[in-house]
Amino acid sequence: MYKILSKEMLNPVVCRMKVEAPRIAAAALPGQFLIVRVDEQGERIPLTISAFDKNEGSVTIVTQKIGASSADICAMEAGDCFEDVVGPLGNPSDFVEIPDEQLKGRRYVFIAGGLGTAPVYPQAKWLHEKGAVVDVIIGAKTSELLIYKEEMAAVCDHLHICTDDGSEGFHGLVTALLEKLVAEGSQFDQAVAIGPLIMMKFATLTCKKLGIPIVVSINTLMVDGTGMCGACRVTVAGKTRFACVEGPEFDGYEVDFDEAMRRTGQYRSEEAAANEHHVCKIGRGK
Image 1 (cartoon, rainbow, N blue to C red):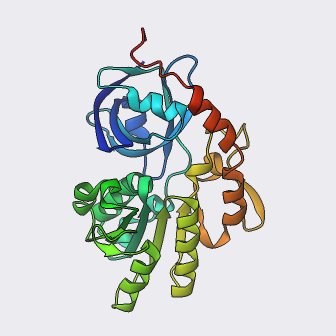
Image 2 (image 1 turned 120 degrees about the vertical axis):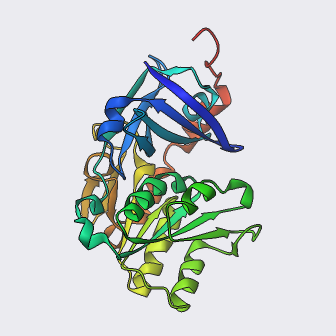
């Protein structure tokens, strides 16, 4: 059993939990994920590791309440325990293999959309500590949905806030803000985009126009996290890849985003039906 050490709601639909998991914390690296199960009958839910504390023996996960299983996770409280927490899974970000002396001074820009802000945090923190120059663009529909603003400001050189409705920061899309930064003189050696597929697609198109290499995280396609179910298939450079075991990060220029987006809509009717008939089990004799 894996105890929840703390829980907080970052906005009305997103919760952050710190979970006791010493072995995972000791091995985790930026870019990796884990799988949780609420109970013996629970669905396997892949969640990106948003932070890890090797001394405390804890990992942090961030969950958005979308479907029945994520609602069960968000209903849990500090002191409750997950039946299973498995990880770290997936490949870490490529930059963890780059020598520190090569990272120092290298300029990164992270483009974080919505919940994708949480997995950006450990990557930005890692690079900042290694001496890289890190810009982070956080985008959300409204200011109410922004997360990790204070945490991110502490681990990057420049934080840029962007909202679709203009309620905070730059009024417009993250891609428009990236173009504005470059037009004003900012130069970047590498971009990393994490968020909705549609955002990553247009971030990639924008980076291609600007001549900036970009890595994207295809974690939104993952289901069982082992490659066995095949749900995370994605075409990269014309070949079928499995995001959970060969990713989750890939060269954005090589990803077939249109195919990936079509596949994410396959089970919307089933998920809607599950939500309609879902009864939360948390707190009912668990």
